[in-house]
Image 1: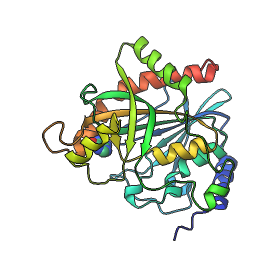
Image 2 (image 1 turned 90 degrees about the vertical axis):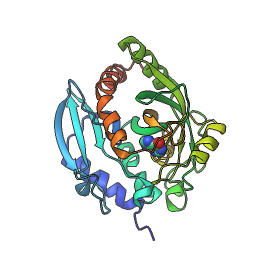
Image 3 (image 1 turned 180 degrees about the horizontal axis):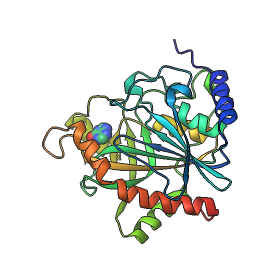
Length: 280
Ligand code: HPA
């Protein structure tokens, strides 16, 4: 029985806002597996462990403490969530959605997620950045069922433009201007934590997936429900099972995240500049 209620999250947001001068939040960012995000040109104002923010037990994530970093510049603020909650860890859809919901309650108008994924598409090599234009939720859960569905209108949120067209095209344009390739594609969100079988990867390819991963789709549904504009940058860390012809390891996912750090930082720095300037 999941006892994580909307009243509990609202209290968490009140406490965070009372304890930290967030300024005018411009965006919330989430760093996925192996990905580190620093806001170049912003000042690190606070680093708060998740266990001091969220009202449920936080599992250790590969030995490091997940924190939310508040970055400030002038009157503006950014939240960077270092690590996320995954359904495969046993978190409920409500707990998984706590990060975007907290960001939304604190007033962030934009939700930028990053994650790691496996490429299903032979045109998308390992190490590629993929601007996600749509998703397929295959996790069998949804953060809007039950009490949380009645928490806010609309009860049946539209998902036609779940991924903000203006943010997506800005990401494509800024990557091209910075001189590196990005792809555009569809994220198939599965439960995990076992990687897919080759037959499953073939199925995902036939239904139109570009990359496959075990996260983020619940967050996007919750973020859209609160009216935030969403961007998802997925790092295809590996070729999905059966495509590379060899077993997958978590280490290659982590290593690819490190290798893409510079490209992601450049892209996000420029994108945040445009978001703050109000040009995108
Ligand atoms: N499958 C699912 N999730 C992933 C993968 C993958 O191949 N790589 C990174 N996350």
